[in-house]
Length: 523
Image 1 (tube, helix red, strand yellow):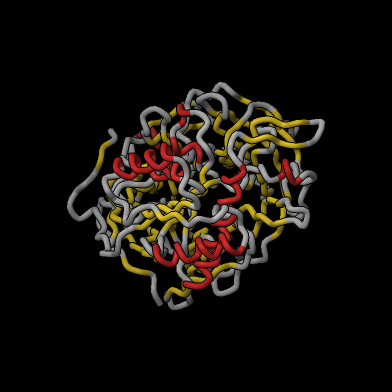
Image 2 (spheres, rainbow, N blue to C red):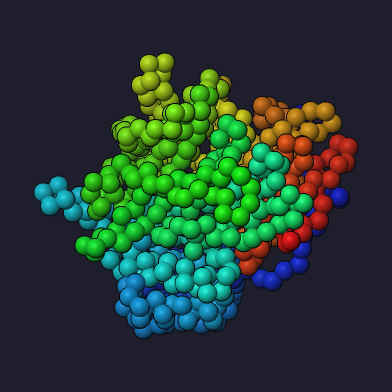
């Protein structure tokens, strides 16, 4: 069996006609905006907002970046003439600008930048970026929350770090990972879709008649624009995010938070529970906490992992009795923000981290006595932002750093398995248990470079036998998702421009994995 790309007639879903995709790029000065412009996907219209006019060379760099984008700027860069903090004047000016642009996505800088050194005597981190980066990001996040609250329209936000190592590409500076597997099938078969936005997590859900309701914003002041959705052993979705809260002394607390949904319907998400962070005793170090990765082991224990201030991995767990254990430190190799946790074939949990200072991956796994073992010998290097759990235990999905090809790593076989090379970016969403001519298949979904999705399939548990890829037709610049209900129905979902949820259901055709037309999820 060989890998191939399947573009047969009838296998591609119909794409709904919709308006264009508009991205607002907001930065302190044109020099900062130029780098963010380079990140924009093909086809997106770009609107640049700068707080200050900046220097001549910075304006020239921005003009060059906009020209290289193919003339997709909707207007000339807008300069607000404000100082860049999150004071009311700056937030009001940003709010007016967002009102004029009405963006689908917003790109800005990192509110909690990476430290370059640490003065132990004073307990003060030092940074390679100016304070204006974090100050601007804080103001932009506040304005984006206010704009979404006023308009009721979901606004997705990406925050980016300054790029420190050109070997890893521009995707290496993304602060919060793209969500995958955000479509959940409840115990009753009804679906819920989750979307991280500027104002919190947006939920859409089905009622008992199958009609869709929402969007509903789950309460969560200070939630940062990232989300991990993880089903527990019974299929209930657990949500993990970061929350940023101003302190009275001028600092900020950044903490890991957790919520869960045990029924489908309005107001069904539990309150967000703080898990703190491994460096929470000192807010200056605690604000550097990485985005969480999580997995359940075979006994039902929930493990949560984060990159800590020292750029190694910390973890805590909640056994089946519901009592959270304290944060513990794994030590070892320095890792970047990219972590993924998976359930191993033997029932334990493994965590993988992209290395910070070189191209590669480190793997941690527990032994029979509970001690963790570090392995730096893994023979693959992923592109930043592409590590994701596979449908089967012990498999990790990624894109190769050098080729961009989709691949899987098997911890049991200790081998890398090529999955073909569909054009696309970002991580992979998954579904398993898809019946095809009496055989069970696993399904992979990813975003394409042209603003539509891709879907692939291979016999469940056998990615080595070949993966068939085809156009999914989803009008999205984010990773699509899919799930199989308890009745065996496969549904794919995507977030279209404007934050609208669209769905396509599998059509029953012998020998084919085909989807019907994409339809808006409206009541």
